Length: 316
Ligand code: FO1
Image (cartoon, rainbow, N blue to C red):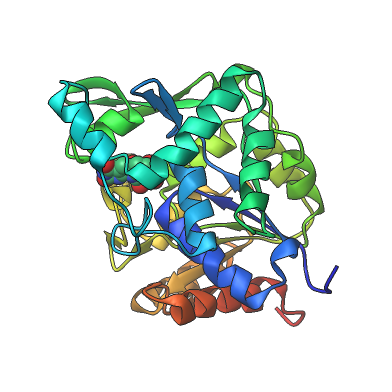
């Protein structure tokens, strides 16, 4: 294997995938292990969909729809058109090419294969050398309590366009779930663990809720760095800023750091929040500021490079 540090990344959807694309450009990809969120997984039209795993797969394979950050490009929607004509549910967009993966995964799950075995096979067939582990092979489902009642994650996020006010989040099944094979080892043995710029409450907490994961992070001797998902009080994408205000009082890098306080050692903040570097350092979190907006491949690689420089350089 090529030399380089082993890095394990906790990742949710679009922000996590874009960070990983940058990391795979600055490190040998086989040195990277991803622990992916499965709290967004659900069944629709009889198919098992794992949106966050697929966003990572499609982004790393270079077939993602860059505009939305999820799904594939090019894409058509003939099947969904017929679903609509026949009175089926169409609020969740399933493109024709994307459907191919859901068909194969669903069939293999029904035959008794594990999500991690299927994901690893898909990953290899897509030609990816990054290792992608679902946080758990057991069902862990994010459920949100909102001002419009309790609902599963995709109903909240896609059907209601994350408009409802979130009052509580829980992870159904998490208490009895086991980490997928390789997850705890990847957290313990990596030279660096990175918490990607993903929503702390909706994308990272469902990973941390799997018994053993938070403990493995807290017991680690080595660095654990987070990349901020908020810039100047705003989420780069999605409702992270609103959830931070509700559950942590403010949408700031410091609030994110407090949320990860039991294990966090380093944090990369945006230049717009450079003033928070001193605040973080004062509470024992090594911090640096960089441009964290990951518009294109070179910006993504720069964020990854800045994270490695912050967390792995000797003199810090
Ligand atoms: N996000 C949407 O906002 N609308 C959709 O119709 C939608 C469909 C979809 C299909 C496959 C897939 O892998 C992801 C999809 N997403 C969609 C994204 C998904 O909701 C993710 O869970 C969120 O981006 C949060 O990470």
